[in-house]
Amino acid sequence: MAYNYAINDDVLFHFQGPQGRDVPKQRNVYTITARLPIEADGRPRYRIKSTTEKVERVVTEEQISQLADRPHHRMA
Image (cartoon, rainbow, N blue to C red; front, side, top):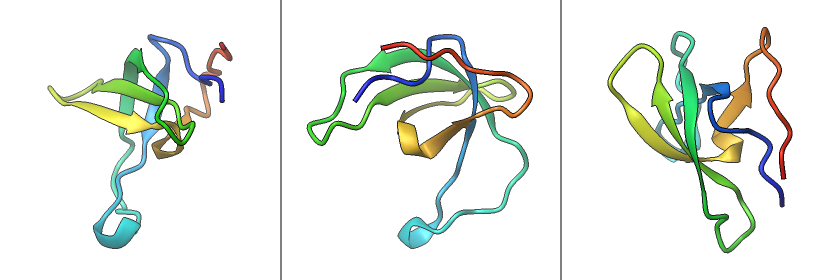
């Protein structure tokens, strides 16, 4: 599986509550700071940084989505 986001792309991070339930929150905009090695099951991973707080996370691609108002780069 190829990476669908490039470094410096802005994305939405989807928080998950207990047992994988979505947690309703305000927009959680993060910037991709690194593309990490693809996991053994083929899922791309990224390091993302909050645009409003001093928070960084490592996430898999299904935990993020592109911003509706800004297209992302499709890169392999």
